[in-house]
Length: 138
Image (cartoon, rainbow, N blue to C red; front, side, top):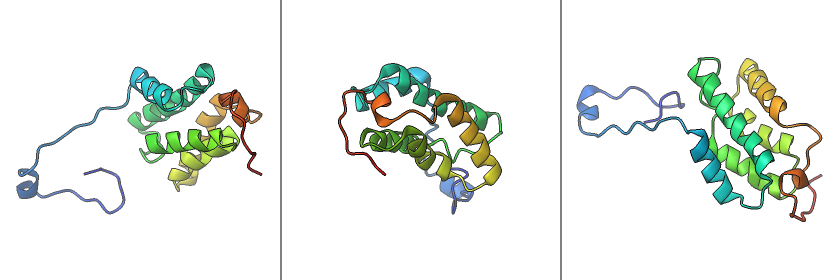
């Protein structure tokens, strides 16, 4: 059961007693780097590390109660990098893949601030994937 997800509620004691609990810890930097390096071996490693930093910064903000867990989405991060590889500007892609996961305006501002500290507006797809020839999204 994923706490804080829409439509979930506490399970009653009788139902909980029928299951084993799997507690999945927060993703650590080395594991996240390994995942992204395997998924995107052609990416600029220093720039890819900025995306790792976004994820970890947001994870820390969530642990400190500043934001919910909604924008901390590994699938969203990977999807963002995939569309960057296809030509979308990094700032647009990461906003679509992570910032848009929350609907709270205050939380969107916090997430956007974290992203802007790591991803310059001027970056293009080629900055992340330098050997990639793509058709630009308009």
